[in-house]
Length: 299
Image (cartoon, rainbow, N blue to C red):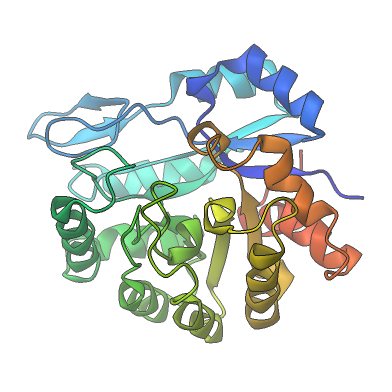
């Protein structure tokens, strides 16, 4: 069996040593760290350092320490701002760091993630989607495509449907760019009572499979469950996604530090590992093989 790799964890929320203990307890071999500490006043993810001219450059001190101490267990993704004056070098530097696997773009959410019904959150995601295809990110995607740096793009949110047209336009314009649709691309429930139509947008998500450079990060999926573990309703949708994309383009991510209301870390992985409706190869792909191939990391 291939190593089990979690494609996204905010390890800074628990720490390196606690993370290792939890990984061993759950049977998870490796993880991709997304070091995230909120947003600055202009809605840019932290941690970051200011640059002359007003942009910022993102840093990952905990992630870099983790990969130095335990290179067989940890890798990480980073971010870049489209107005970074040295953007081409910053993107090329990602390609040159073995433990840095890609870039991630996510929307600024002015209200807490659980407040998915806030109209300001909806407006923020819409603004990002317009920005992604409005010219501001043209160089960003071109540089990433030239360097073959995968880019995770989140165009959805808590209670906010994905702006999937933006993903389609980006992927079509940059056919050599590995684009990873973040967190399934659909509206995610923010609470047990605030539950938009959970599966309505998956038909549109699956239609993106016709673009061969689009991959899907199966993250926060247990939020969609109405049935208890092993979440048969969520399994059914995962089977649809795998039928559309093929398992080699789907990667599991728990984001478990933000999802403990919905499932444990072990449960968020176990329902896939134990799913006899998938072949052994499909389970291996989703739980690690796709990360190895698409992100180029073999822990």
